[in-house]
Image (cartoon, rainbow, N blue to C red; front, side):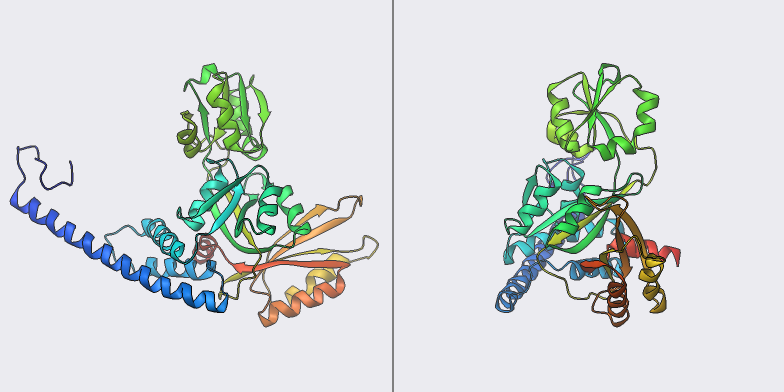
Length: 380
């Protein structure tokens, strides 16, 4: 039924009670618009103050905590799960009055990176699709983009090696993180599974759907592409080719969803990092990422590297190793610790670990993703 008060209902007219309710809703909508414009005027003043102080337009911790507070205050019946989506767009729209933020990501449009950008920054930004993860770093480093968004690990397939390698080589800092639950779909032009002779996608989604593919498309030729959206583009012009990607990709490239939720593991989640040229100030709930190397001839070096974190009661969230290029059997050790590098205990632990290491680099201290905070509360 239409919300237009002039439209008839099933009885051929609009009841007085329904008309009054619709008039009340219209009045609330006008008040909401007035409040949005009041918020926008305050944001314009904030923008002037930031320009005076040369402060960053985007502050991940402030936006995360604002939405968290609103969720905690919500008494209903407005659904709490919708608050993040609504206020991300409100923040994005009013932030654009300060400056339109440019964000690079692995493109083209329709990738999961595209979805991650919309989740973190809203839609009132300049999106800059890049052809590779390296190009995301390059665009951000050169200042053509304010920020980049890159996938770093997945709960099914593990680390994204290209991102870890680029973080070591880049001068950029990690400015934020987000968790995106990834639901993979089988897409095709015809919508018929029996037409598919080839299956295309980025290596990560192909790995996330390996068992499903073996059961359902055992004879299909596998085609690796630079992104899920590139696979969708190929499928739009080749009826014998299916693509693994998102429903957004299906909409963008005019494909049909053959089957949904084909990932092998439920709750499949990808962690994305926001990279930029600025280092965020402590937010009160942060993560610090660092990379260390140790000499392979040093007995017990890894134990001594990690010992300061235990001694200063700094929680070690994760540790991952990557082989060093050109140095067989030597490794880079990536660690994520709870807290900001400016926190006293974290700073002491990092300095002592650096003293043990052959080399080290702080990749960034940044606000923890809201999903991480909620998961931690649920497990406490």
